[in-house]
Length: 106
Image (cartoon, rainbow, N blue to C red; front, side, top):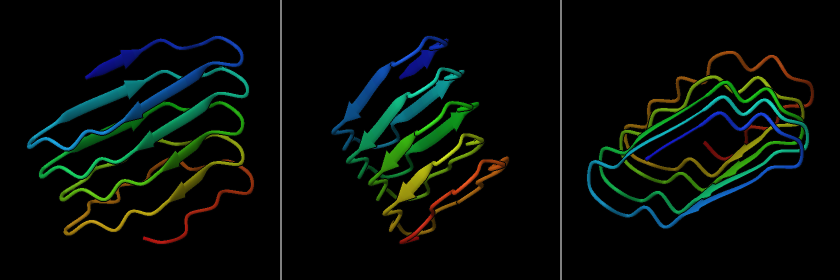
């Protein structure tokens, strides 16, 4: 799954229910203001969760419980990343330069 180029204002992006094996998910270039990025329920094995370039305000990401999950590049303000409870999770969380970043429950 590849979703690119969401640069507008007030974009809603909801991706749910990826429970398959070796699921590839790449989401890039979300630079808008007030972008809601709710990615939930990724419980598959060897899920590649490469989410890069989120520079927007109030970005939300929750519920990545898969095995061998990779996440990179969240630089927004007030970013919430919760519930990463998988086995052998690669939390390559780079470029979090935002204000008031919350990262509980890893």
